[in-house]
Image 1 (tube, helix red, strand yellow):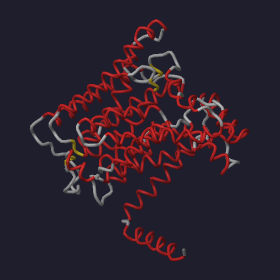
Image 2 (cartoon, one colour):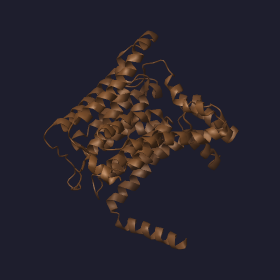
Image 3 (spheres, helix red, strand yellow):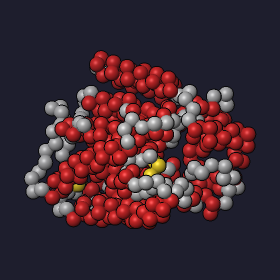
Image 4 (cartoon, helix red, strand yellow):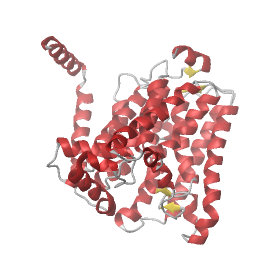
Length: 420
């Protein structure tokens, strides 16, 4: 045991010794200011805190593990398990901090995963670090967890891990990560069309999809053993889809131009669900019909597109449901520097849509935020179609220190061979 500890200590010292001063300065400064920013906002209490988060936490404190036998929350259990762990390990933590702690930690996991994604392309330089730090200061990332106390960073971390593992051809951990993301929130399903693209183009085997239900069932077992009926647990997401009778919950979607009346909802809800399904189908078909190989960069680009178009066309979307696209767009900008403005468009549209709920007013009307998002989607879609159907090989304008092997193609047979 002593030898293991000594070896670990020596390894840490060697890493510190090899770290450049500029790298260490950016890392330490970024961490200090990102933590300080969150500490300055963490005491804020929103309507969601009083209506949901605080009551859930109090029930877990008073009832302990037996609380999971009841439907005291409309969330899938994994997030509630984290709250339970906090009550056990840190019982004196103020509730407003305790309910936000999982999301705050997930912020830094998201930053690290973006660092990993960008590091695939940029070797041994500061660019990946800057990408990860940028995530920690993105307005919607900071507001979502530290100010609002929402859990979107948790399932987004799973999505980012899935994308990262897809890019490095590690499919078992990719599907495991997707399953974890889906166990936290149903909105992780926005990424599913990308996985189906890889399936129909024979980059992956259908057997990987079996990992997803395994993780979902595994996530329910603790609550089931506590006494909650399994059928009720399985139907949590079904129940969630029946909540709210609005075409958009402040989301910058196509429904922001429609009036919020029951008649309009009844007229457009079913067509809206079909529109989301058609968008997913068109995404799959456009990619499937291309004869071009899917590169690692294309995986990232397709992930960004699909996390934009699905919530854009589906009804009943909250403003927070573009959160994965907000984060992925940052990694995308580091891969395609000429599109540096896309995170400003995507994240800006989300930031504008947050205003109504968080601050009780709009900086600009929601349809303008929707128009900004349409511009972002159009630019991205055009670039993807050019790459998929042009006969010219596109070379990405990377940083001069880019690795020489960055444009490796993910050919189906080659990837299947690597994963045997």
